[in-house]
Image 1 (cartoon, rainbow, N blue to C red):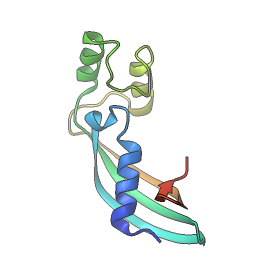
Image 2 (tube, one colour):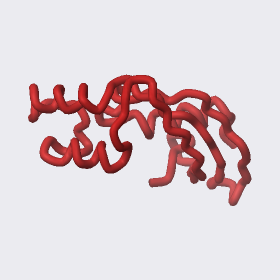
Image 3 (cartoon, one colour):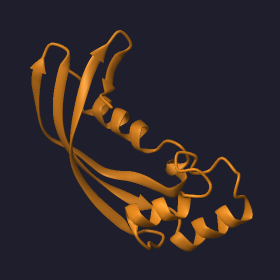
Length: 116
């Protein structure tokens, strides 16, 4: 089974992709429970805080200055503001969102990975 540190790294890497690592950081990570579903599947309950590193206004300014830039790539330049606002609302630097979720991990030839 994966250790707590490995689980945190997997969750962090999964969340902070496509420019989102510049938008917020992951803090106060805690594995609260977990169970082995099979030899190759582990289900884990985690909680953590997403802490904003930029304000919504900063993000608007960045995108207007460089609408085809690589930041926040998963959303696409036309939809980025709508997607960010619908997911997170208006936010300021230092605002926190507490998340509680269940994560399904699969053991692969390259180690544990989050099931998508």
